[in-house]
Amino acid sequence: MRPVDQTKYGRHDGNCFSACLASILELSIDEVPLFLGPYWDDFLPWLAERRLAASLYRRNDYIPPGYSIAGGVSKRFGDRMHACVAYAGVVVHDPHPSREGLPSGVLEYVVLHGLCGEALWFSGL
Image (cartoon, rainbow, N blue to C red; front, side, top):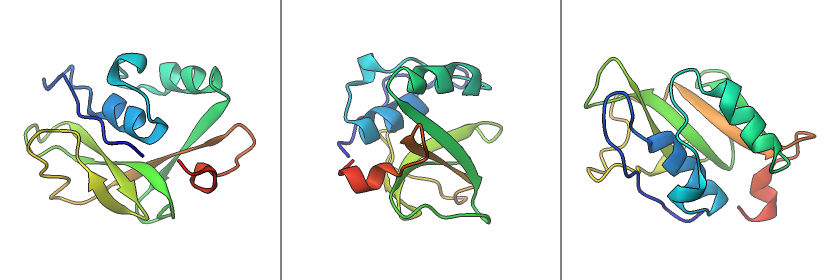
């Protein structure tokens, strides 16, 4: 994991999720599209092109043992979600310059994995 900071900060166009994805995959922010709103329709095909997939877990159902994208209520925009990189369920990188993390806690985790479900944290990512 190589921390990447977000470059857009607006209520409707912040790219914290893309920055987290870039961090975990060790890409530049410019290599990751801006995924907004119900992003799964665009996000999953983008991952599949890279022979990857993702699963969404609610915090109370599963805490991933490796890197994941943790989502929770944004401190700046209470009606929006914010994304941070987590490791073993603990936030380790907030892509926002404030570095405030998720003060209200994690609500869900997006876990990246191979197309057959193999975990990425065993590959060194």
